[in-house]
Amino acid sequence: MIALYAAIALPITFNFFDFSMAQTFYSAPDTTGHFGSFGGKFIPETLIKNAADLEAEYLKAQHDPSFSAALTKLLRDYVGRPTPLYHAERLSKTLQGAQIYLKREDLCHTGAHKINNALGQVLLAQRMGKKRVIAETGAGQHGVATATVCALFDLACIVYMGEEDIRRQAPNVARMKLLGAEVRAVSSGSRTLKDATSEAIRDWMNNPEETFYIIGSVVGMHPYPMMVRDFQAIIGKETRSQIMAQAGKLPDVITACVGGGSNAVGMFYEFLQYAAQIELVGVEAAGEGLNGRHAASLTLGTPGVLHGAMTKLLQNEDGQVQEAHSISAGLDYPGVGPEHCYLQELGLVRYTSVTDSEALLALETLAKTEGIICALESAHAIHYAITRAPEMAQDAVLVVNLSGRGDKDMETIIRELAL
Image 1 (cartoon, rainbow, N blue to C red):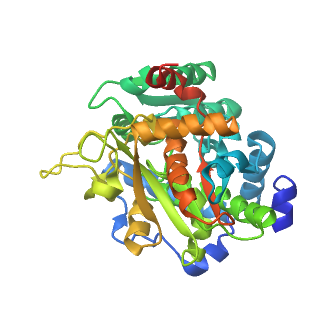
Image 2 (cartoon, rainbow, N blue to C red; image 1 turned 90 degrees about the horizontal axis):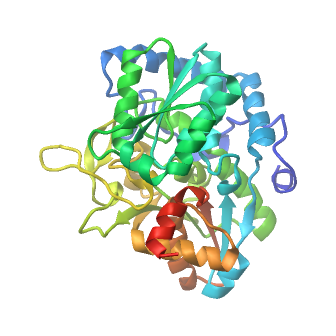
Image 3 (cartoon, rainbow, N blue to C red; image 1 turned 60 degrees about the vertical axis):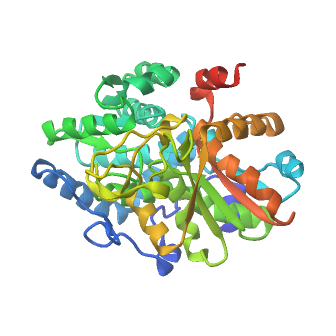
């Protein structure tokens, strides 16, 4: 299978839900949806049946070869998987340290990893006979992915998006509308991802029977954190096979940015079994600095309930959720997926943070050395790689999950870098 992954696209007989190797070492969540003390279902009574029906349908789909085959075919022929694992030779040579490899999720159809999960969930919506789909979005990439799959499957699509994110992600708003989605502006709170998620949940509560809620990250009530992780785990599966084919060894360090955390869990999950020999590093948004406005929930957050799950979040002494800040709309969230909290607690993944200015510098460096303009979210992980690689031997391997491309961020990039 290693050579197959390296050479050609996904075979139609590929078992998408074969996690046997990873689960030999690590198995979570439990049957109640908890990752240790995190996760679970903290939801109103009106949504209990919806969550139970979704979990039951997902468990059936996992054991249905036709579901896995349909998803694999779409990922191969529509999304373009497997995405390349690219050796960033100029960047590696410039830094004179570890060899840096980029997992090119920016080359997925729609420009980010979000499409992997959106396709999986829209197939579940189809199985459940749902005709109306809702979603939340911050950077707009999940909104675009959801609008895309709804157009493909002829489903009504409503995307909730904060007014602030609509302002700074105008190209993605236009893409969603072109694809036939209705974009509903959210003016409450900080007018960003947290508030868009809250509005989407209210919609689901008011329209529970006909609506399917496609959540874009490993957040929210069970089964979403587990389900989204499973749909994104293809990233790590491909990476393990590709790096063995190209470098002849497993990576020494793997890093990915963390907001809600789907791209990071998608990359890390396959490698948890090697946690004793591979350093896994999640990179949060330090924003203007950890003493100022930031979105570093794992670094400085405390346990609490947000959007249906126990997690770590930014909150004051009275338990009121505090406003998060990041230059990247996709990391601008005051909480994080519950599995990340558990992985941190177990010591399997280390988490650090990168500021707005550091992410901008990394984005510019990658563009000028490799000709790749990445998303501001991904730039946080790139900055960690740039600072870490010089400390490592030149035959060491450092893999970065490049979760998305920077087209959507050009207005912000132009303004901040005075281009």
